[in-house]
Length: 301
Length: 300
Image 1 (cartoon, one colour):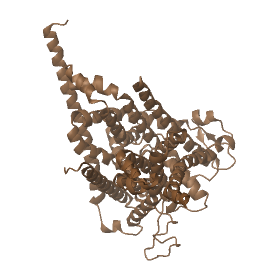
Image 2 (cartoon, rainbow over the protein chains, first blue to last red; image 1 turned 180 degrees about the vertical axis):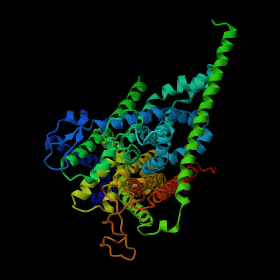
Image 3 (tube, rainbow over the protein chains, first blue to last red; image 1 turned 45 degrees about the vertical axis):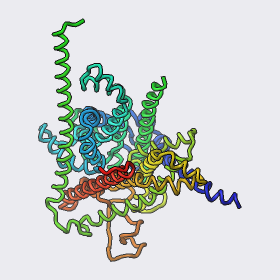
Image 4 (cartoon, rainbow over the protein chains, first blue to last red; image 1 turned 60 degrees about the horizontal axis):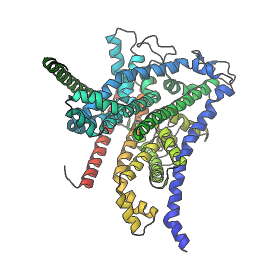
């Protein structure tokens, strides 16, 4: 009788929440396993090599079950890397300056106006960014640089930069806030100006947090599909300069998955790209753990 | 030792640099605020400039159906992800010891939250559409979106439980309640406002999601508003029918613009989505301010 009571009062609830904890593992594994099950077909069923997939620029998978096409995804990989890299180059100075403004220069105005504004940036759906990109940014780029088309790496990078700006800024601001106040006071006490304190004391101490923010932003940029697909031009060619249209990993899946025959070589190759994206996410998580793990280690010393 | 005039020069130079950099920080902040204002203003103005009431109608010309689908889909997704996320969050914050398994669950949650939404969409397409031999349907879309919301809600729940003072639990345990009873009657009610903020953010993410729905919820919608037979494919409340959302409509006008006014429709969809984002952001802010007031007992 008492045992039954105890069961109802504690163990039943505990069992349910434990089950849901394990459920999180199950979902993650299910996604990984199903992606592998579909994506590895390129290598097992259609006998392509991993080297071909990663480094060949020849993308022409056959849309049937015989295979024999080419599945080189190098163009898409380079497209993803170049747009994300350029987006980071554009956005990191802005994010850092904003984070410093929020925390060091004007915390009151920051908390009341700037922080809410950044939160609105976070919430705006990516397709809306993509749509404004196509209807405003692309024509503007075409006119400003006298090009035939405005679609391309630059347009995609700018859209991505705006999209990842709030994530990097928020994490960087948190990192700067967590630098102990005593450090700043010591620096001011020795006669430093505010900029000297920021540059020599605050930023070096917030380095790993800022780096985490940048990696999180990069992960978001890598995974963005539709906004990029709308402005990148979707050309299956390497970008020659920052204005040339190209394509990337996510845009290819978004554009071509619907038309490819289920289980065919084309379809399977697209699943392989999805599997690659899954591994890239894992890599980013690993990097973040590496960066923040180092901090804990150096704090222990 | 440097001479005095030289020291003065260095000090003056440092102060000039300091003022210059402060100016730059103000300029960047001003630029960002202007950019946001221009972005929101342009989208709203463009969306409602050529507005006619029949653009909101529940027909093929209007976006009423898409608006309904968006709301319905987000409600379905939250019905699934909120309980699951909260329960998993309770496990992680209250029961999980610092073991290998717990750390592994944490890594899984982080991985889930960083997965590209298109990859989750493909997973949904495979499991909920291909493996069940169904055609594109709203429920599959809701399940895909709930996978996106799940880590968000789990993480907020964990944070909410961590933020509670230890006395809450200690007091409850001291009165003879079990750990589970303390959670249900003491800790969870105290966490609800904070969790609500997370749910609002998750809902906001669901409203704007498109990539995960591309191959799950489908790109068409055909509703008959006088048909209330739940098994019929044109019944609005039937979750097993295709349901295009506002965000998908924007994507569709870019790629397959058949209708003459597709640009105008996409502008309107963008404006509605921006309005929703503004509304949700204000709601979340009001909630957290209310929370602060309650926690500190001071009126601002």
